[in-house]
Image (cartoon, rainbow, N blue to C red; front, side):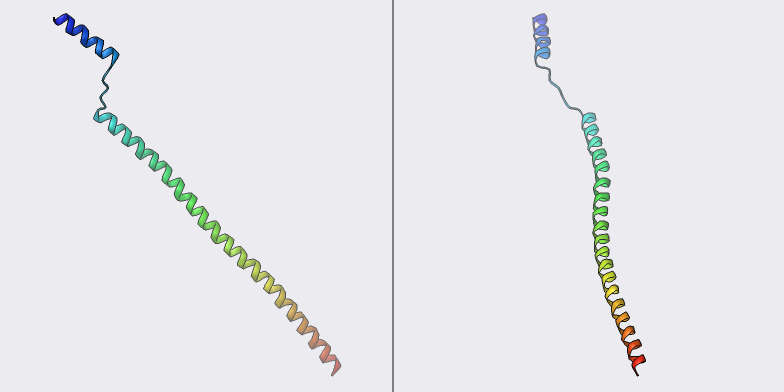
Length: 92
């Protein structure tokens, strides 16, 4: 009987091997997940910082362009006032 049961046990293990996941495999998977998270989070953080800085730069660029145009208008107004003063000074 022993030979038959040994033969049946070997036959069962070859046809349907029972794979047990041990503690080492669980720790290995946890380390892989931690490594992936540690490599993904800095990338996300850097992308967010670049996005917010580019928004600030865009806002400052718009303000700069507005101030430049305002400066042109004020300069034209000053030139106009200077011209009028020069003309009026020569007339009187």
